[in-house]
Image (cartoon, rainbow, N blue to C red):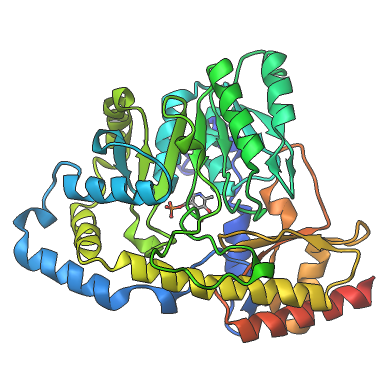
Length: 418
Ligand SMILES: Cc1ncc(COP(=O)(O)O)c(C=O)c1O
């Protein structure tokens, strides 16, 4: 029988609520040539460790016949990650490290491990969009928690949800997701008191925390104090310890080489209780069998050669100066009625404009009149929450001069519209 009309293939139920990533759509629009973009979240390609990584990669290809084969997770890389975690203030063992294809996969694997279809998850109201995408196929109840711009996730709200049986679903959440350091999109780092309380709550109610920490090794100090001397150790003056330093049974830590080396390595890790690592392995295998053996070995060779401390010091110096340049320009040019975060690290500053302003409309004007782009804050809200007057500004991928110039021109439009 010949059908005249070919029917559309049927898609899974959850895809009816699927939206193209608003963020990626926006970034595509605002990444046109000639645009001065504060929109993306990209590291500066001029700071990629290209030469040293090329040497590590060719050394591995020339000397290690297993580099192009299927294989077990590469133990020497796990040993390096244990050392990196120690620099981050976390004691863990090789057996607790699980290698992933980026932190994004780590998040995906953990969501599959904990979340049942229709289950509940606790997110901040403003959340990394990749986390929302990961849980979408489960059609979850999202329990939204506010974040204040000084101290981070509102743990009183976490406590209230948990004490009340985590309504509206009636079930306790499968996990709490948070970015305690240099939050994306907010740029805030959680206070020590809130960290301790959050971990206590997780233990008391037996709820796992997924701690996403891609920016934890990119901390720059207090910009007002102009700390620029890193001393002997490139990461000696990190300001806060991850949640995983407080607890090893309920905190599942996600790390990544994307921001400290390069995103295209697609290499990250989970620190999890050893007893769960085998199960995590089964979940990951379904997705991609394993992370690239070649990349695992090349990154390990790069770390063997001792390049990372110097590289991190360079990144922290450079990104720290760019953060300072953006903050100084905001203070100089933005209206007094605006307020913003002063991030200790990472790549983003969150700006709240006066209530009467609309960030989406402002973006259109900024692109049309000044060729300047940013991401309006509503791109990061969980369903049911709305904001209109906020924006996320990225400072890692522009020079200090471009930042000063761009913020000045953006302020001109804002001040005109006020
Ligand atoms: C908070 C957060 N988590 C996870 C990721 C994904 O990291 P990866 O490149 O390691 O998958 C990003 C990337 O921007 C991020 O900002």
